[in-house]
Image 1: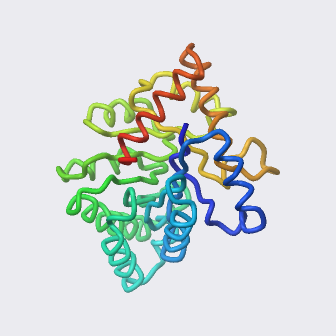
Image 2: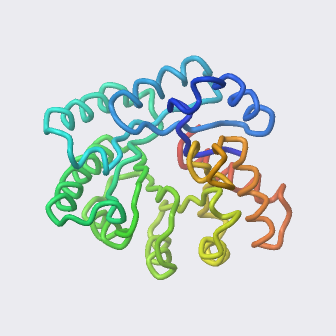
Image 3: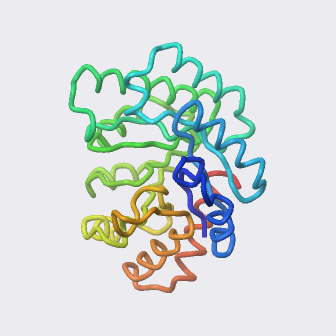
Amino acid sequence: MIDTHCHIDFDEFDADREDVIARARDKLSAVINSGYGLESNEKALKLSKEYDGFVYPTFGFHPVSSQNSPKEEIDLAHKQMVEHLDEILAIGEVGMDFFYCTDKTLRARQQEIFTGFIEIANEYRKPLLIHGRDCEKKIFNLLKEYDDIPKVIFHCYGGSLKTARKILDMDDYYLSCSTMLCYSGRHQDLFKEIPIERILTETDSPYLAMTKQERNEPVNVALAVEKLAELKETTVDEIDQRTEKNARYVFGI
């Protein structure tokens, strides 16, 4: 199985990163480390070289961070992505977050910045890894204007089932479920209705642990796979194989 979205470059893993990756290797076949900003992208690339063939990078800029960033910093992020296109699996995580941002001006700024990242994915035909919260339908409507994005991933999808169905009407659009599936009834109800052929699995480590006192880590993606098997009334092996096949197809690994 594959953790398609985590942040093992974060400071939370500085004390035992090697052990965290070793635990992941015991159960997983790959980990995708998603860049969060300029420095995080650099760290993600460095880790991918240290753990070549197991840790893979994506380059992004989180919307809540980017909304307050000067144009020069956004331009640097664009340049960084384009310069490393052959080394990264996707553009992301990028997107919009209307849960944390309620200011209309900042929301408009998020959309403007996100559009710039969409255009990079579209122009260079790279998968687009999306952070969308409380604005999934708006993001979906934005994407309708672009025809050359090869694949789209809604990371940690938590929107409505109605919007999910619209997303799944599109070819090569995928919804990723996190370890929240293990304890969120809402996410369980949602992903029970989503076909396994369009599901990816992730932890979003160090976030979304089983309890607030814990730190999440990539190996826990196995818990999401187990819960999916329960919801779909099938075997863990079936879910493991199918979601890994999806991830390898989407990210080209």
